[in-house]
Image (cartoon, rainbow, N blue to C red; front, side, top):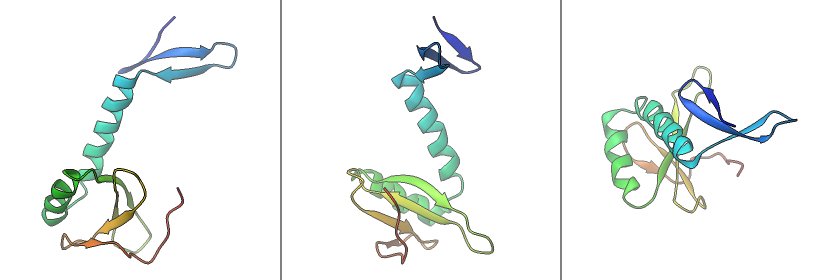
Length: 102
């Protein structure tokens, strides 16, 4: 049995509990759409740096929004062992002064 939720289809894994799971293709499509939303918040210098980093497996994971402060774009390496901040001037800050829970 398959249930459609607008643009994505989900398959039940626990009918009694109401749990559903997306297919891998749908998960990738959703991740790609989320990446596009994040990238629209970056300026040209940050996009240029990100494009270079993506060739080495780095990925934009999220943009931190704190009240009364500039947004902070956070990237992770392919193995998720390291993170860094894409500064507004396009430079990469590997010691941003905060920790991230994994």
